[in-house]
Image (cartoon, rainbow, N blue to C red; front, side, top):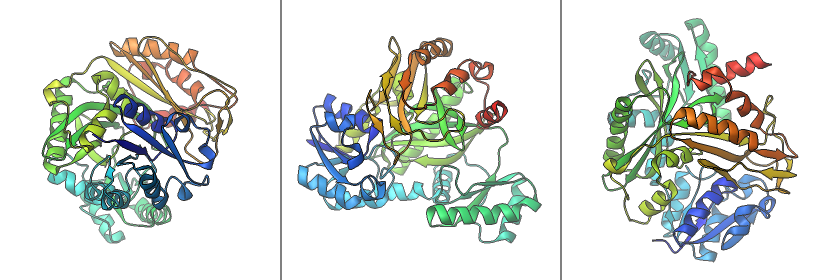
Length: 447
């Protein structure tokens, strides 16, 4: 087991990892920018190192400074959390060259899954069902029209190096295709420095379902069930639940078995999430995230397994602590991402939190790094906390969530709490009857 882990992140995920390390008896080091000097994870860590000014590129994305912090403090491993450098293959390679363990997959696996085209090819080779579309990047409009005609309209054009909805355009007819292709390539080049795009069949009313997987790097793989992440705004997840209201046990076992085998065959090490669109009983691979997900607590709630403990164990060479038959699914869990944003316009709302009170009681968990008097800086992601609720079934979970949202108090800034209070009372949400377009239609009707 590791002696000292450096946590290369901030906010609630840094605190989440820090807690796991303390439970395992591992010393902790956190890095921080000057804007985060008074953050909770900085206060609670065994050691802290300031690595630069507020801009991320000069601090949390500064690989040289993070490696230097490891060497200064004697950290023998780095946990990247999510975001920032968590899916940076170069960072994983550099740590390996310095004999520091990256708590995550190899740089090679990060590279494969970070390229959407190569990821799709790999998924197909591993037996994972994929969305019909081009085998690789589209070279020109003529090829785009040929592929679109083969798979049928509507189609969606996606950036190969993309994410978060950037470089994604829908074409419903051949007449739409030229403009959609040019726009997607332009956006992709501006956002990612790579204008390569590919085409897939556009599904009209799919759900977004992801499988939590783990590999030991030596040919063993398991899955921890699925999460339904269909409630999204601008391709960003807002509300996640496990298990999905749309799946039954047979479907769960089928797609879970496919994903666990794929991870084993790939020789993958650590946590990963295989993401699908799901429509009319069929799963279609869209991407794999080679890191811990923001929504991992709902999986922990229904399985009782600490996924960060598992990450650390696998990275230290201890292998997986569970076999597939050991993993049982208990009840239902929902996570709401609480952001420092206007609940209608979603404009960021940095500032000082004058009062912060979290709900409690059976089945309630709040992952947050903020506190009364904490000033939210304007430089980073607006997530300030996650409310995770667990119940014996979905009905109990929803009842408990409604009560917990009423108890949650954040004063001094605007947050998305009012949005969740509206959603929990909506009949479609109560019935689990929603798809990836539902939330944006709901918000448009509210305006």
